[in-house]
Image 1 (tube, rainbow, N blue to C red):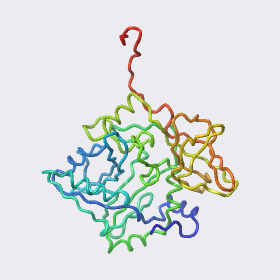
Image 2: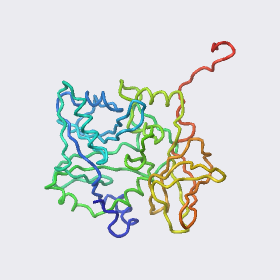
Image 3: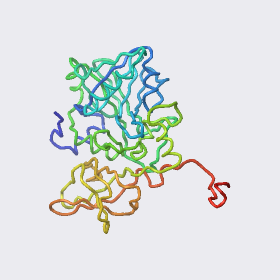
Image 4: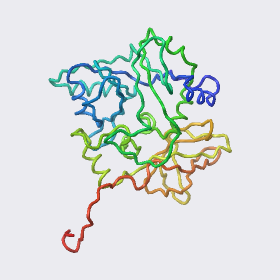
Length: 339
């Protein structure tokens, strides 16, 4: 069961950022992949370049459907002997089944170790007294070679790590920190513009819409399922929706819920939906939302509630101009498409 807070979520945010607290991540599943072919095999299935992943390195990858929509978001850690996959519990059963289905004759072994390990999220540097651990480090702040970031905004710091601890050593490792809850971590994640699978992704989500080309997609690697759509949208088109951070009106001391629809004045249809909500210790009420690309960047949006409307101003993450990076000559249609 997820613990939302241990008293004061605002204090817990400060404590997290200073490396004093940690959050138990109950919603993560842990899969270990062993075998000589594991990296080349995962490389062929996922959106990230994994062939040259070295011991101690972390990365992130997406599993896409043939149309390029996000099916899974996977945090990956290589320990030199095995590759560890961290995924949402809500999608782990389908991920594990699909991985086993794709083994064929490869030298690969897939094992779900969610019942043997537990995950602890924290910030900064920490030397566990129990000795070396499996530590996944988020690469979100600094795009890797082969990736691209659409956002020009400067988000809040996000020096985030996840430690995988065996069950018999978890309580000892956890005792090296104070406790923080999910509300504190969510608020910091929103401030860092960081998408999360369980919150921001729906059955239509493309990586471009969430700025996930920055950490989870390698644009020049070999073929994988959904690659054609990724390349086409990035080079020739625009994603139909875009991720924004919202600064919410907190005067009514009311926060909207994730999933709430967003509206624009004089436009009847919803412009998008709120995906994550937090009360930041410095910025106040904030949220991530996925909205239609055509929504004006200076438009003030609002959420309808039973006691009134909550207005929201946009901080641009994915701009409407995202994509269409290929410099193609204009076609003269009157000349049969010739220049």
